[in-house]
Length: 106
Image 1 (cartoon, rainbow, N blue to C red):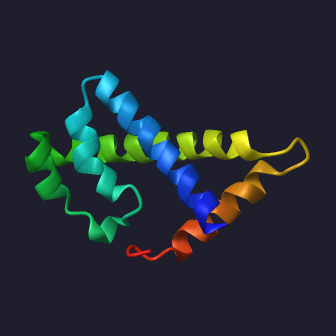
Image 2: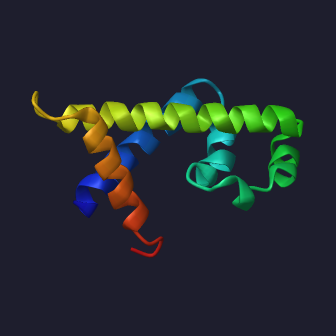
């Protein structure tokens, strides 16, 4: 299950990176991708806004849209693995549970 979850997440990340690169936003991906699963308390918006050269309000919107797109890509990747009788929402919840159980060093 961990392998399945990791594969799904890696493919969604790959697609997100590819989309960003094709839109000339490779730097945005490189800066924001480590914050896809970080909560707000762990995110230093000031530092990130300076790094990207945008104000904090725009940075928050960009990060929100970045996370939203990643979730959409995750859903699409999960859908590819499902049978017709599977429940997408159950699969998404299971994916999130498995991903949250993975330690960064695993």
